[in-house]
Image (cartoon, rainbow, N blue to C red; front, side, top):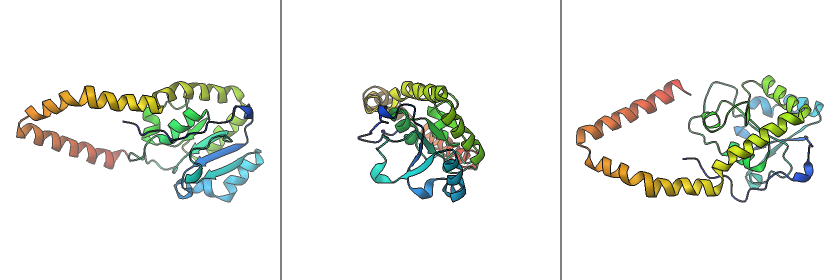
Length: 204
């Protein structure tokens, strides 16, 4: 079940048109990859005529002046299984191209290269950003695809998911669980523990 998008989301201003100047990170600064907090990386952006803006909690809903969104926690191999895809949903709904890392939530709900771009190194990220700056068609394609994908993560769509879960899906599952014997329940619990251990050990 996906989390809700950010409340009172302010989408990118249409008046910005094809402007591509502000690359934004919405989150606590310490959650941005260390390489991207380095002044040298910011200088590389500045050389492209771009500015990195890090928005704290009081501006997490405000995408009005965002031209691109980055959400890379690190450039290692962690898939951040405990992190949601909210940053991706917000960018889709705000109409802003999204550049993410290896997060499993991004890959699970999105499609790299189709409705967002995935970067595994600082160099690859900078290449993606340069392409976005130079290629208006790419920007349009990503935002259009994000608009379509984002329809599944609006507040109304998320509410419908919860309603279906509570009224349609859970009752028969609860009845099936009630009818299970103790051995079946213990087997289920054991299988769940194995899955959690496997994910934490091999899919980080």
